[in-house]
Image (cartoon, rainbow, N blue to C red; front, side):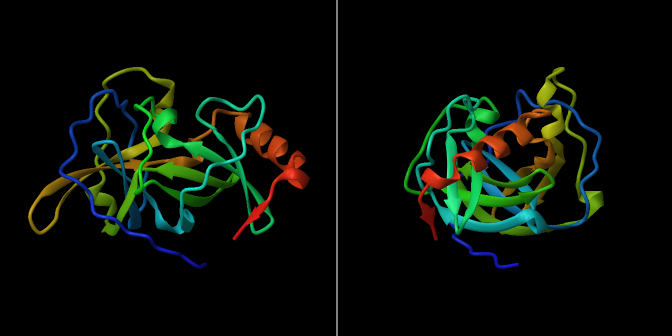
Length: 190
């Protein structure tokens, strides 16, 4: 597995965790890729990361949900793109640090639009705490838990995501099918 890295610095500590739902912890020990969405820090299992790319505007697919701005053809593979800000109901925003994290999930390859990638953290399962029960959201399946870490000069809270539940049931298959149907007209990017 080749992992291309484009690291950027983060700006300040997370603002808070309001609006997250509870989920029993289930994340495994190992390395996690940390990234930023707005003022919050998130992390995903690095074993699911295929590559990190500079942001490219995806080709819009008719009928796709609002949080899926389109698809990209990455070296012959049609990849649906998910804007994690929209998927998590955060305000939209793109800047020069916005990147695309390409993930290999159970449902297939998916690209995630994130604000910035920061670092790789090594976590033990004992570090991962359950997310507090704040509401009864259907999106609670997106989160494995929380981890509080201390870097050289600051503390930060990482929200560990379960991206295997990123797309609503049935949406993953429909999105991938629609994307593959459109393959001939989508230019390939390297």
